[in-house]
Length: 158
Ligand SMILES: [Fe+2]
Image (cartoon, rainbow, N blue to C red; front, side, top):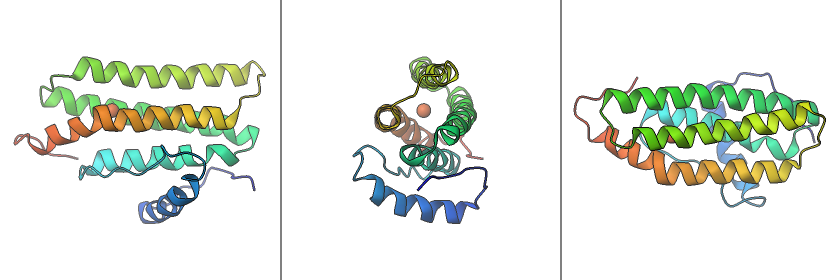
């Protein structure tokens, strides 16, 4: 089955889809899972990224290009938002966390360029690399940021 994109789903449907996808995808990789930080903006963005990543293994070549484009846009918006949160709360690890974001964007850019040059990507390898980055990043960088935001009294999530 090939997934086609371009449909915008309301958040409640997206969450249900993600929850069922999480079980299916656990057969393919152990690193695609939902994180809940109780930070609505971060959670929404992570869920969208997870949904996009979950579509990689079954995407056609054309859908893969679209997926990479959407993932890059979603990730850029999400990273910008997290970086604004960090700056607004004088977060100590801003520079290192931002460098991690830039690394992910570089990975996506490289994959996009390879496809544009006519190389056929190994979708599962691509998927594993992106999921591994997301899982590692969430545990090592986003979890501490979410804890910081929860305990920063001047902070209001939007
Ligand atoms: Fe992050």
